[in-house]
Length: 74
Image (tube, rainbow, N blue to C red; front, side, top):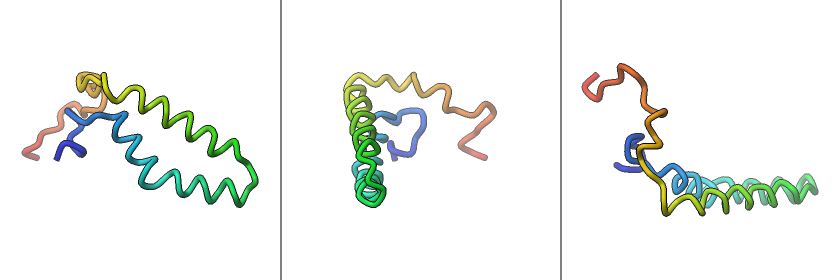
């Protein structure tokens, strides 16, 4: 599954998905509770930064994510 394959995963798209599925709702609740709208503002800035990177993501940028000596057969 591409989402879990560190060699081909589109990291920015994964980050946007995480924000969409989990973080935005949590940050919205926390912002209401804490009366700190800057939390949600910063989350949206981060989301936009990641979204802008999704189209031109090069999987070769994932090289630093691979563990040396890791083998799929292990």
